[in-house]
Length: 249
Image (cartoon, rainbow, N blue to C red; front, side, top):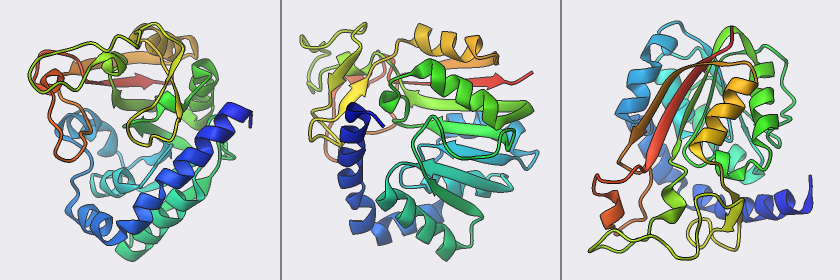
């Protein structure tokens, strides 16, 4: 693990203490099955109908895993490089009787059997931690069975540009859509370095790895807002999230 990834892992480990402090609240949310949104469920319904084995890369608090099982997945194997996040998520899954199992590892390179997954799921703040998107996409292909699918639901790559002005749409003067990375000054803060990928780079990495793209959708709503914060950029005129579905031949 290089120094930049190690620094980010330390930041994420610290930020993941939130999953412990708010354990009971997250357990209640998990029981309500409100983590996967309507667009995710709509696109994933035909896949989940087949009772797939799911690998969730960069699983965070793990609430998506519980929803994936509730929506049809036979089981979820989830990977996160935070011991704190994975441990709290495993405890929640165990308490709820959900077949979700957690591995602490860096992505790409998780120690999982090739061809183990019918579906690789990743989303909600994962790709920003990938400094080599081509290696990530190749790793996804290795995990998938023939005919298996990759599903991504993520913040739109343009999101780092949007200011949080409540009254009018603004673009941050310190950011560029085509920058390699920027320093996170919101959650999880503490100077984490987020790598930036354009939508073109993401699609190209997926296709170059050998996957066949079937869905690419963009949405005006963000998947995350700080509590009590509103911004004109989130009111429907700008792209704030996207979904991608691709199949391994």
